[in-house]
Image (cartoon, rainbow, N blue to C red; front, top):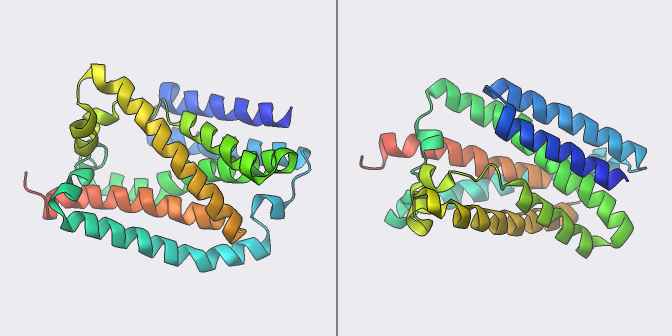
Length: 233
């Protein structure tokens, strides 16, 4: 029952954020509220802070992992910018159309306190711990990652029109949207499995959260900066 309740909370948050929410603040507040409810569900299910990877020891371990993971992501991003084909990844209207203030909001508030907080708490914290206690690590990782992939069905609509690399790969027309969404689900499910394994190896929810923030945060920042400083119009 706890797993069903957690999934119901996530479905509601996903619909609010992708269908109903108006304005960036609503998105963040929805994510924070959903995170709080998920933690209450986890507590009622008997999960401890250690089970969720947010106990003191886990957070200390995560702090050791965080700068290494963030640094690795930054290096990969800069290497992509150095290669002509890789630069297309950073042609993304979701970032390039932002003002400097909107960019800072996304990188410093929306991503860490919205996207990363909810998704890591949900998929590498609460759901993973619930599934792991009932069915073991492998099934927990598979189940959590599959749900993480499905979580991206609504957010990935229109991705082929906003991102140049995705549009080149799948086409930028409305008829190509289904293939784009399907690919996004598969890619994010695989990424979810990697993040679950990082959670297991580090013993901390902070490690996958740091990696998640670095990918999204540096992605936003470089996609905003690239057409202004590196990419030809």
